[in-house]
Structure formats: C-alpha cells, structure tokens
Image (cartoon, rainbow, N blue to C red; front, side, top):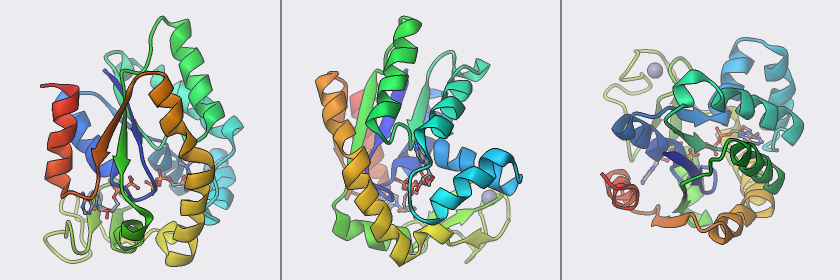
Length: 214
Ligand code: ADP
Ligand code: ADP
Ligand code: ZN
C-alpha cells in the first residue's frame, strides 16, 4: 500500500503517518526527518537544506526529488510506504507519478488532513520534537510523561527553529502557494481522501483506518 499524507505544516501528517506505519507494517518516510538527520550529521545535503528550512522555504526540487527516489527504492519499501511531507510541489508529484508508472505502480491513497490556518499556529507553537528519535509531542494535546523529556528514548525535547511564530506564517504561505494545488492533482488522479484533522488524534486515525481498510 502506497500512501501520501497531504496537509498544512502542523496538520498532523507526521502523527498519523507514524500510526499508519505501525498498523500496516510499512515504513514512514518523512522528507523533513531525512533533512534533519542530514543536518545533524553535518552532510553536504544537510548544509544545503538547512538554509532553506531555516527560512521556512521549500528545499529545491532538484535536491528533494533525488533524495526521495533513492529512499523509495530501498528494500523495505517493497510492500509500500507512507510518505509524509512529500510531494510538496507539482513537479515533485509528477516525478513520483512518472517513477511509479515506470514500475507499473501508482499511489493508492492521498490522505488530506484538513486543518484550518487558525488552528495551525497553536499546533506548531506547542509542538516539541525529540532530536534523537524523531518522536513528536504537543505541550497540551500530547504531552510527554515528564516535561521536556522524550518518553521513548529519554532525550531532551526541543521547539524546532522553524516552529517559531515568525517562520510558521511563512511556511503557511508557502503551503498555500505550492502544496495546496496537490489536493486537486490527486483528486484528478482519483485517489484523494479527506479527513477532518481538527478531531483528536485517535479519532482522526480511526477515520483514516476506515478509508484504508483493516
Ligand atoms: P512539517 O511536518 O511541519 O510540515 P517537515 O518536517 O515536513 O515539516 O518539513 C520541514 C521543512 O523541511 C520544510 O519547511 C521544508 O523546508 C523542508 N522540506 C520537507 N519536505 C520537503 C519537500 N518535499 N520539498 C521541499 N522541502 C521540504
Ligand atoms: P505535521 O507532520 O503535519 O507537521 P505533526 O504530526 O507534527 O504535524 O503535528 C503538529 C503538532 O500538533 C504536534 O505537536 C502534534 O503532537 C500535534 N497534533 C497532531 N495531531 C493533533 C490532533 N489531532 N489534535 C491536536 N494536536 C495534534
Ligand atoms: Zn526520543
């Protein structure tokens, strides 16, 4: 099963993608996580990506598409995957469609997690991330057991630099301009599914499971 998560930054794509990955036994592929791992590791790719990410801009397609293509051709992707944060532009979507077509395959579901802009700012301001294992929390809606500490690995939780309010507005603008058109792209492809992302995490997940099947 090949699934794409669509939605604004902070809509809950990552939260739901992790649950889907666990339930259906497929890898969760987050381009944001891959970029952050590269930044942490001090790679050339990471250094290139960081300049854009810090400004709330998209990393250029030339860098992003190649990186994602390499990842989906790895062994663990044979039975499918859930993509979180890719595609984010029409050229990215077209590259993915073409690459899959070349293998006689296609995306099965594009799940749009719909959350209005008003809710996004509080979601992002309260998001806390574990730099060690990638787990995500929310100070109010999904608090860790001990404040500021990751439940899973015990490392310190941080507010991502790009989750500060000044960058969040920029990222929302970028979303509306460059990523929102993908909703129509996947509607035309006949695979778009909408879920109400303002519900609580578990209810959103149940709505997604109803779409994907047991
Ligand atoms: P969020 O989960 O809040 O939407 P991500 O972790 O997915 O954020 O992405 C963080 C940043 O990484 C983005 O703002 C962007 O700079 C970069 N990025 C991630 N995925 C892509 C992509 N597919 N294309 C371009 N840039 C990306
Ligand atoms: P995205 O990957 O789309 O950027 P995340 O999954 O990282 O979004 O979620 C953004 C923030 O909102 C996180 O702090 C997360 O814990 C919280 N969150 C996710 N889903 C919900 C929900 N349904 N209700 C309330 N908060 C949520
Ligand atoms: Zn952790």
